[in-house]
Image 1: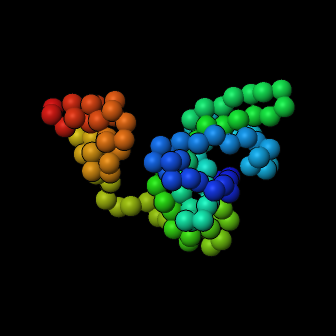
Image 2: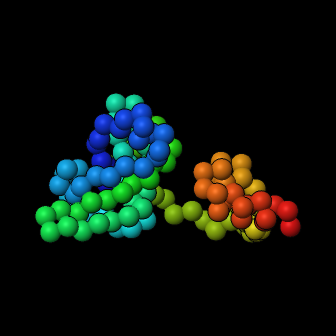
Length: 130
């Protein structure tokens, strides 16, 4: 996961969107549309998603949409990776319960995602009213 270190203004935090250039962020590789990255400023780590990419002759610009805060420990895991070897788990003897559309709509509504984007709010409401 890529790390972008930038100083976020209060306005940027409220608008939850900012633009960064490839050179300005000293990225080691190009970012993809929809890719998740970590952003670090004086308040700590936050998630972000690449929402738009603009190519110029000299540089590439990325518009990122800010997500929620991430603990330092969680950020280190995503940046460094899980250092413990993964042990294969045995298949569960009891099948996992099925997840319905209502479960997903309820989860979105509770997470606050439905309040951030009006279309998601409308869809979540419709699904909950079924």
